[in-house]
Length: 262
Image 1: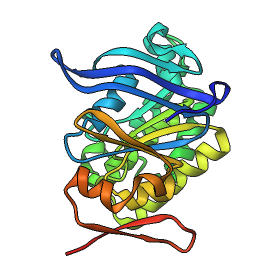
Image 2: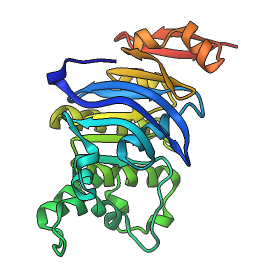
Image 3: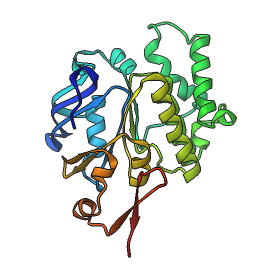
Image 4: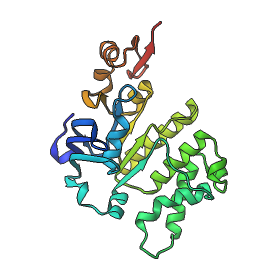
């Protein structure tokens, strides 16, 4: 996938990543334009989450990760946290924190070493809680939340960072269809209003097609297809990469719908 250089927010050049010297993702070249939403799709074990972790600087990798033309490797931890928001699929949730406390961590990169959160920080957190339907749970301990509620809290922390690049690893895991749509609607609204660039992994191919501008299909650690959803989500390609029997339908607005076939 390529875009004009002056419109590129994120570029991956020859990116390989993995764990303990074993590459899970190999030789990925991707460029994402500013304000776009790119969904990384692929079968289980394809390397989707590892790719996002490499962009976030959380796993060993080679190659280059550029944000607005500058290598992310040159940024210190605090500057990187201001630039990149990351919501993992299975986060570690500290004991004893309320939902508000946890989401407030998203403001930490914007505070000085000894500074306390300001009124503006608290307003940003309150806004994130409200938009994610978490206001009623603001004072609940994290450990008492359901899986879907925890997932929304994790996204709330990432949104509170107000970063230029938002990385979302399976953000709809554990959510019913209504909350999944509400969450993706919110992400879409924020990136259009604020110019935030979004890269997510999504198992649900139909939702990926409806919300992402472009899809990157990864299989066995390599990009095997990239482009608009209608170009990537074909019955032939999905059969080859997912070993799935599907047919492709369309919504009234023309978005692909992936339907299993018995």
